[in-house]
Amino acid sequence: MRSIFRQSMIVLAAGAAAAIIIVLSMQVLSSRVMTEESNQSEASGPTVSILASDAVRDQSWGSFAFTSQVLIRDEFGIRAELYPDLTTETLREYRTAKEAEDGADLIIGHGREFASTFQTYAEQYPDVEFVSLHGESKHDNHTVYTFDVAPTEVLAMTAAALKSESGSVGVLSKSGDWRSRKQVEERLQELGTELHYEVVQDRNNTEQALEALERLREAGADVIYSRGNTFNRYVIQQAAEDDFYVIGFIDDQSYLGREHVLTSIVNNVPLVYEKIMTDYLSEAGLPGGIVELSAEDHVFYLAPFGPMFTEEDMAELKKHDTRVLRHLYNGTR
Image 1 (spheres, rainbow, N blue to C red):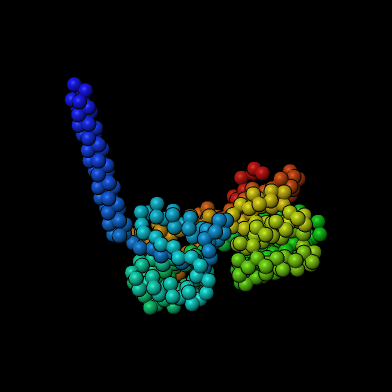
Image 2: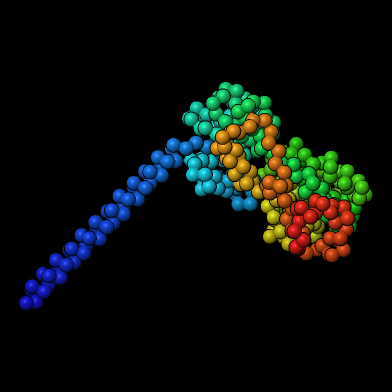
């Protein structure tokens, strides 16, 4: 009797195991079919190549290339590949030519340094669409998406002048990368504040940036607008050690030093990519030439002001920038 019972249990166990195997096999087969269908669907859409000169690091310009890649993949269901670390013109030219030859439908250059490269290759590959963030365009199949943050920077630098005790502020930027200099200088002259300006050749060159920072400090600047990338965190760290104020860039960088970061010029780059893909997939397609985005497109804004600003400070800022302040700043600190 015991032997029969044992045999029955063995049979039941074997049957259960077989059922489990069948279910798992069906799941694997279903997953494989879904993956194949997904790949086929992906392959049938446009192929996008994103080229970046920076490494993909947290809180950097290069990191926005990655977050933008993820956004357009998820939102538009397309195949988008990212190629970072294209640090030289030779590397940018090689990757651009290779992606065009390999059948990319759209090549996006993550920065103005790609504009000159695309001016050459857009002519050689008329069936490929090229887009660069900032720069100039000479061909119908090369569209430049850019945005002018001048009003935002003018407001931020007005705040810098307000908090400067020395009457002297500094700007640290990549060479040839600060379009708003004239407007900022005009505002600072109105406020009787002196501007000192230093440049570096590479957004990621921390050593060069800190040397430039030292020159700005020696010139008397006690508020620094650091328009950098990797080096920003080191500038803000120095501000905490030497007790001066900083305006952040690209991200809201108050988390790096809440008591020393006045505000930040924030760029919402993934929204620029969303605009690019919406235009590309529209019936009209990419327009070619230059597309100027504005504050209404929400691709840039001023981060909330830090705790060092009093109610009197805010009232003074509103005297200078009532319209801009209402548009860019929500009134919370």
